[in-house]
Image 1 (spheres, rainbow, N blue to C red):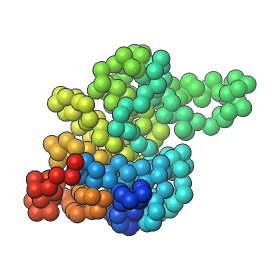
Image 2 (image 1 turned 135 degrees about the horizontal axis):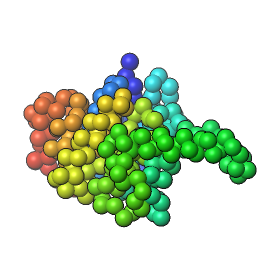
Image 3 (image 1 turned 60 degrees about the horizontal axis):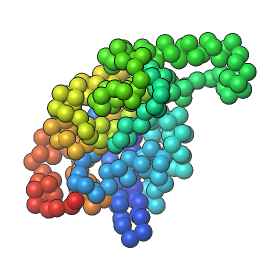
Image 4 (image 1 turned 180 degrees about the vertical axis):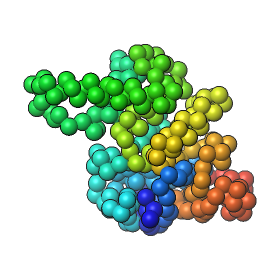
Length: 254
């Protein structure tokens, strides 16, 4: 059974049909990409899946359970976390502290225990710190733990953001243009990080403009054009698909 099932998803903004009857499946352990020209509806699709937007029609099912009407926090609790086009780290906090924020999604001590500074809160905070550091170590960025997050290079900030998302122990990670603003070396490092994340058993759904990255890491690719799905196949088949070639080479959708 597919881990994520998107069925006939649609969303309109006034006179603009941003997403129209889009359907696809993501199998467990897969890296699946969503590509398309600017304005094709990719980020809107991500916002629908992650609960930041409600669809006008259609459904999103995760691990056999409907996500209809669930906001971002409930979607995250169900096992889906995401990153955004622009890095959103907390300033005046270290890289490790930023990753710990992601881990707090799984905390159990509760608000009252934190306010009262009860012993179990200290214990859990210590555990959260250790687990966050372990996540950074797996991704190869433990050496950045003590640095102020916003003082890091853009590529390093992207890595910290990925670690923060993974610290929540998601079953699926949504990556919204993670290579945006990265140079070639940083993009190559990003590809390795995504591979390590998949190696931890996390299924990945990625929106990306960098076709080299997409073709190198993806198992399957969905192509959108003007909000509609025009292809859903393996990378080699997508490269040869005449509709995809027409959209990228024969039409201007910017």
